[in-house]
Image 1 (cartoon, rainbow, N blue to C red):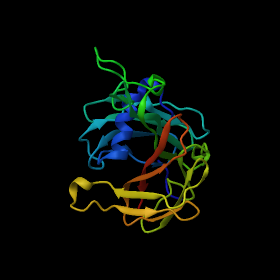
Image 2: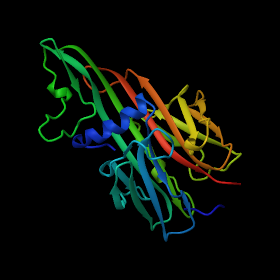
Image 3: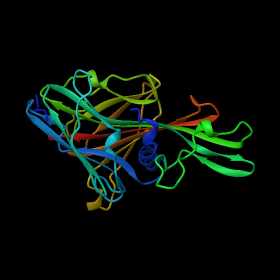
Image 4: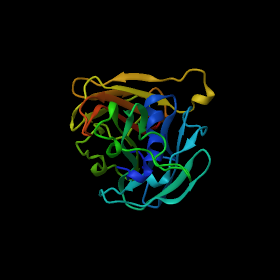
Length: 283
């Protein structure tokens, strides 16, 4: 045995949109990078950097906001984020691993983005401005769309960004899924990954296996090499992804899915994304 290291409220829509939109629509990538994921006892701390950037894991774009990040203890109860600070390009915080088992640190976002026309004028819903600057109006929501609106184009977006930390022996309580949206249901524990060995991760959409799901796995350190080193993989008919790790290190995993199973009136598309950072150790 090796040694062992949300839903956002509406007022946080600005941060959520800034995090989710780049992940889904451009080269900007959302991530959390822990100082380690496996710890030998319950007197350890993990320090986590959180940011959105072009290169993994390099600070060059903007921080991930701390008010959208939560901690879950091994028994599933809420834990504490400590010593948090946000700078120009990143946020950083600590998690005290004072209980044995696997912890989860995560953000979860649900929002609606799009546009409509009212009296011939196009207006935006959601977007990158949920918390207006002084003197600027708040962004429009679905409730602001008038009954006579035309050209309504709404997309329901959701994202999860999770990391798992284990003190002592790994446990599975925090790996339980909710049955809503795109979720990670690992077969191989995410804190028991070894270079040269295959790991299996199941992905679910609304609680059911997600076959044919496109998943990208990228090792950190892109800034210092010419090739990104991405592995572009696909889940099988049972929603299971198999990854064989070429080397030890930190890896960014991203899965995305789009369908028409919306829950918001007048929305025609649902976009979902899942992100996690995984640590692969030497044999």
